Length: 143
Ligand SMILES: [Zn+2]
Image (tube, rainbow, N blue to C red; front, top):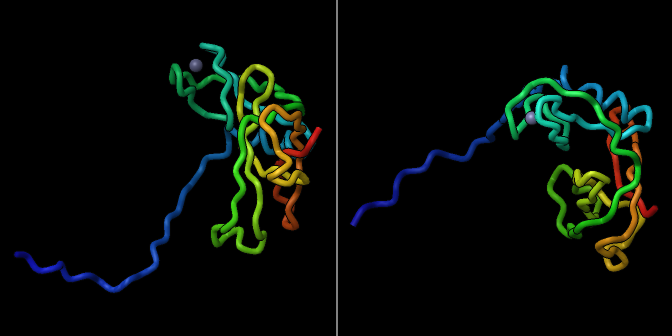
C-alpha cells in the first residue's frame, strides 16, 4: 500500500497568452464601425469564425474579409446561473450560438431575451457594444 504523495502548498498559476492581433485587427476595427466580418480563405474558400490567421481546413494563410451581415438565427443557448469569477458581477446571463447566412456560427451573450422566451430558430441581430475602457464586443439581440 502506497502513501499519498506529499503535496506542495497551493499557489496561483498565471497563464499568459500572447495573441497576435496583426491578422485579426480588421475584425475589431470593423466591429467598432458596426460591421461583423470574418475571414475567408482565398485558397479553399473556407469561411471561419472567429477570424483565423491560418485556415483550419487547408492551412493556407491568405484570407479575404467577408461581411457576415447583422442577421442571424438562434441555434442554441444556455442560461448561466453561476457565473465564473470574471463575470460574477453580471448575475445570470444567457449565452447563445447563432448561425449566419452561409452557415457560419458565432457565440455571444443574448441580451434582452429571457432564457424562457428564447427559441431555436428565432431571428436575432448581432450588435456591437463598447466597454467603458473602449474595447469592443458584440451581443445578440432579438431582431
Ligand atoms: Zn483554406
